[in-house]
Image (cartoon, rainbow, N blue to C red; front, side):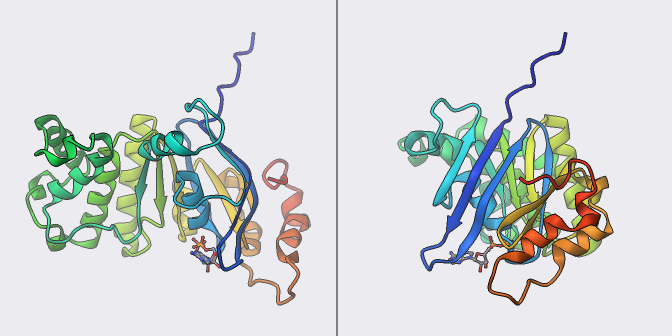
Length: 280
Ligand code: ADP
């Protein structure tokens, strides 16, 4: 007897985003994310990676299609559902977004704000909040820096704080937007390895955008390739071979037609691979 496949944690169905200036940043993006997956978004600058991440956590409202979270009752993410969905999405940013003059502990506690009531947020932090913050600070290896000002830390340490701040909100889904882009290669690898290890230990689902293809191949369970706002690759790292990489990062067509994406899809070297370049 075969067990039923568990419902995906997250489903994007034909999600499109047109910004108010008319720029179409995402075109009919569809994908499913399984519980516990470590998914990496790749694509040239401007391909739509941030827009995709932001439409997942509701910072950007899709102008078409829908984002469905398996554990929220109503289908569309709006109103109260959207607030609850955001609380469950931990976000790690490229520039850390720390408050430099505050301690590491105070920065991490900011991640608990969303789980407090309005009245509670006016009161001093509860002991349980501080203990939870210290526990995640220890997990990212910075317990001895808990009371140091954030702006005295190195870039890699600051990003560890950013990760701790996202973890302390006990997310169901971790979204990271180029979390290691501003770090030197060795530190980038160490920080991403830490993030990966924590997600795997906790069974935490992660969607991480990267510009380092080597790191994507090393850590991703699955790679999603975006080009000019379209998902053009969805497969395991082993299928993301040199031709696929070259196609993903090839300069955009000079034509005004959005044909570059279609040409990626129809390139024999890519379409001959079994599943990875199915229309997404
Ligand atoms: P990436 O993360 O892959 O670099 P983005 O999602 O940031 O790509 O951007 C995708 C496209 O949307 C780019 O052309 C970018 O200039 C444009 N864009 C991003 N944010 C806005 C915005 N707020 N208003 C208009 N255009 C935007």
